[in-house]
Image (cartoon, rainbow, N blue to C red; front, side, top):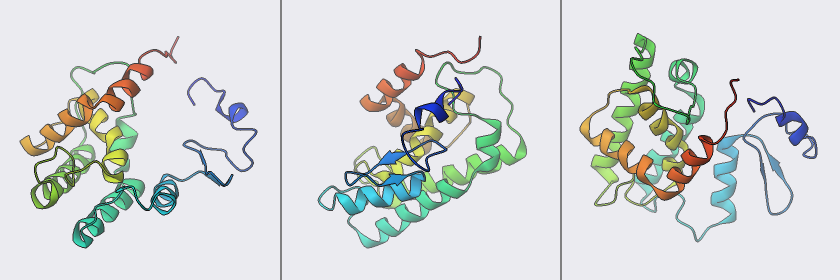
Length: 176
């Protein structure tokens, strides 16, 4: 993406001009994260990618959709960065508002459906997958959240796959 080679790397996937991109087991090409999540749920009915409880599932779907279409101030001001933690970042009012909304969502999910697990809905779900980059941004930019949400951020950052992803991201430098 940042090295300027992604279009060439995606050339073999007709219609794929953006990242992320996913190729289904049947060869379908998906270029939208919401469509990818829905497809994963559809193709893996025995895997609990969404909570089983209907109310929790409804909230998870809403949270995923809100992440998909929202929080533009946070995304614009806080690009996803795994290279380092920034010192002294001062968020705008719009970023603080986005962070507060995310904090509310996370607290509500944890309080109502989190149970004893560390994830938003107790067990790891698509909601956790789509909010992992946000947890990383909160860490990178030192954004303040409630204790409940900070525990969630800490659990996300400490998770094995996330640690591997962050380590991989720290091996590549895009700025000379």
